[in-house]
Length: 448
Image (cartoon, rainbow, N blue to C red):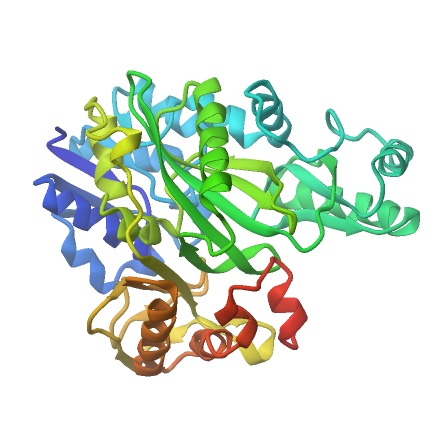
């Protein structure tokens, strides 16, 4: 096991990794930017190192600064969390060259799954179902129109290097396809420095269901069941739950087997998530692989009893998986709400500032993953996530009741948060009935 780990991230996920390390008796080194200099959670680490100014490119995304901090602090491994450098193949390679263990997948797997078309080719080779679409990057709007007419509208354009819903456009006819083609390319170039886009059949009213996987260096792989992430806004997940209310045992097994086939084809190791769309008829299609730990990993931890972050560290240290597929059993239902510093009544505008009141929920079945307490400053420089509220009960009905109670207890002042929005969702009859899809929020809530 490692003696000392550097955490190359901030906020909630930094605290999550700190806690995992503490339970494994591993010393921690936490890097921070000048914007986070006064963050209260810094005191949880054994050592802290400032790596630059507030701008992410000059701090949390600055590979030389992070490697320098790791060498100064004499660490054996780096945990990248999620976001920032977690899916940066070059960073993983640099860690390897510097004899520092990267706690995540191999660089080759990160690179393969970071390119949506390469990931799609791996899924096809593994025999997993994929959405009909282009075989590669679109070279012109004429090619896009020809393929769209062959496949049938509606279609969706996606950035090959995309993520977070950027570089995506849905088209229902030739005119919207041409406009979307140029808009998606421009957005992809601005966001990822890669204007490449591809085209797929747009599955109407799908659910977004993902499978959590773990793999060790010896090729042992397991999946930990599914998470339903259908409650989204602009392709950004808002609420996740496990198990999915839409899956029966047959679909669950087929989806789990498909996920394992895909990651096995890529010789994957460590934690990852294989994402699928599930149509109303029960057919599912591969979307992508997220080669890192996910924001929503706690719901899987709650229903399986497996600490995913600790398993990441164990695998990176060279340990074998301690369980087999037949050992994985889902118990009860877990649901997570992402609490963001955003104003739902103002088109989810970010609301940085000082938290003057932080009254957190608790009680039976409630878990709160956060780095915030009263007096904390929410800087404007980073993602607006301030907490993840997770509940776990014996069944979905009880989990919803507990979440409603926890949301009612949760009071934050000084900044606006998405707590009022979540309260509305958990009062909605369709959500309570499990009748949701990725268009649920846009369909039922008045917002842009």
